[in-house]
Length: 575
Image 1 (cartoon, rainbow, N blue to C red):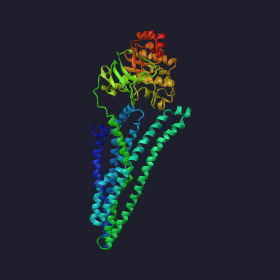
Image 2 (image 1 turned 90 degrees about the vertical axis):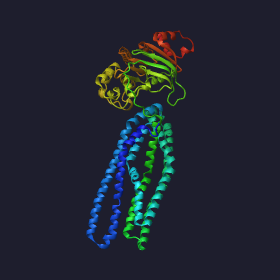
Image 3 (image 1 turned 180 degrees about the vertical axis):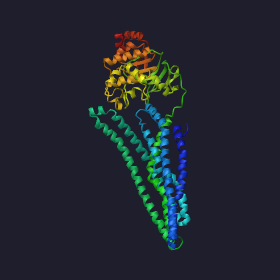
Image 4 (image 1 turned 120 degrees about the vertical axis):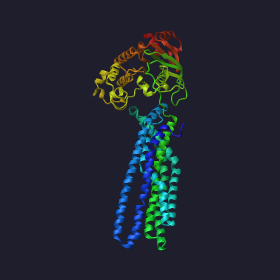
């Protein structure tokens, strides 16, 4: 793998020409910075001595014109850097968002959303005064050379001053790097913990859990604050020293200038001009010191993005395959959950043809939801293959395959937006597909009774809806566009009798349409619609085959094995 993640390389490569242009502008800006000291040199050494007002007016007009040009170049350079920041964000945002999504699947709870804010941190640094100081820093030797031209002693003072201030900046980096890095990490952990906590705000409030969780968050947050304070204390000492050095250097160069003037080794104009030039020489270094915290934040942000993408490189473009018909085969898969060590699915195999309906049953913690996640590609199989129409899941382009898959997880999550946007998967809503999915899910009339119908805003997480309404709208989302394969995990967990009837009708409609359906349920009523039945126990296939055959085996089973699966036994009695 290359040293830098590909999309970051592409983003920085895109802004490189603009940055080179800003460097060129910086050359002319710093060249024009000599206008002030040269003007003062001429006024002190020529105008005051000759008392020639015409010369003064001419010098002032020329200086004013050059300073206008200087200001225009500063404005153009600033605009260039702002647009470079926007260009970087534009090039990085899409692959970065995709990477964060995949990172959240691979490492749940790791706080990868912080990386999106990190991209903003880099953009802000690219558009701020810190980067401008870095653009001006290469020209510091030119100003020091200008001081040497005035008199070697002026050059010595300016050179020593630049070295001292640069040394303070380096000391600032060495003394605060680790604390700031740890403070940033602690802040990310605390924010992630708070976000996860507030997602269950209703439970926390109702059951009086707020105090204990607040104390846990406070511990994480306090750790970050203490590290930040420690780094800030150290940086504050160095900044104070830097300001003293900066002020003393102005005194020193004027003192040296006065001594040289008294001894007639230089002129008063040269003394004033050298003071201005030295100030201009030290300015970028001083700004860099004051903006060092922003630079460190940008560097830490970049490191976090790079580390995430090094773990999850951007997926390469894949050849578009033929539209799937819904055939799925699971071949000896072993699935280990993200962050886990032990498999939850062990050597599971089965195959379904288009139009078949499979029911998956088993006791709690048998691995049913884990198998569902693996079938739709949310979790990857550590061993074995899952194929759709003969092609492995990894061979499919997710943007192409997604519309042909329907997935209703056990915990239905809807997103802030309208009902129509949620059902249409936040793509461009196709009214025909929208209404067809709603009617198939039996939710069309329910939506019509909402305050604004399909345009009803459901709030963050769909909190404006009841659990049953969320589940039925989630079902409509899974059925949107008549997908070839639909996986439903406990689809009737929050449904009333009317909702269960609508769900059964939806499964039968999908079956008639040639859609392959996988239903996971503890409720035996769903088994009436399935063709095949798979019984999971401890992550392994206990039984698989035609529904009636499996139910007959369950009816004849004896001993603790059948006792472990009461729902399956009940299904057999009802069958």
